[in-house]
Image 1 (tube, rainbow, N blue to C red):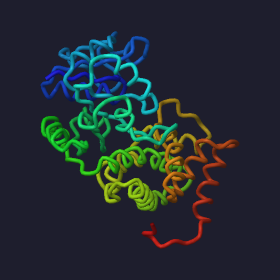
Image 2: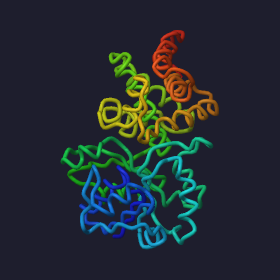
Image 3: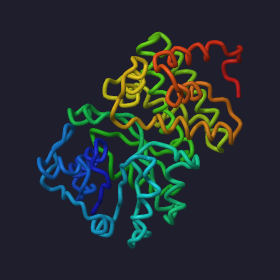
Image 4: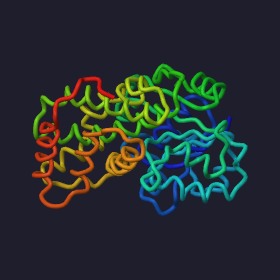
Length: 324
């Protein structure tokens, strides 16, 4: 089977590496002008993986998408709609699309599978692959569990069965709304965790509990199963995001609280803005999200804003623990 992985950054290069090890015929695509592509082209490796010689590296998007049976996308979430406009110029509507990315579109509040559907791809052809795990651990042989979800029951089972290995145990997702929202929202909680690593570490326990409950309320309001917030896509990914030194979102929060700048992509920044839109649309309270949003997009001293955000959360009136 031929699979093209679109995006050859941190996660995309790992997915290509992983699927090649599984025996698939893999093309790893990246734009010719990107540093990620240039590094792989010139050296055959990046700071995370060494590409097997069986992996075909390409900057030809048309060839990559038309030659594959399965198209895996791993790019920045906010660039997905524009990217799909390029992809759908070609004959791809009969292909299977797998989203290995986490986020919510800022301008619309749409889930990423919805962006694909609005781009002309049938929901029956779309799956998402999310869950815990860092590349640095995977390439050292440290296993983890992940989830594949789709509106198409047969598709998600076939993909999970075919992609599983001794390195990744896959589960069948049962709630596409909850899987996507939970996966995206955990990056917002990762920023909060990084702030707490500087300001008040003991609060990371309450963050895990209250963060999951907050996301559960949103998932339920959107028509999903609130229990999805406690699955692999969200709560199951907390250890990887809230505590790992490899987490971009946690590091973004840590450096912000120190008055420093983190230069790599932290999807939780844009996601906090998108979740603010959903908070208003669905009429749910998202206090931790509100605090992260104000820290990321507010003005003035970064360190002061981080401390003010915690004060804001503690000044809220008492609530029942499981309030709706």
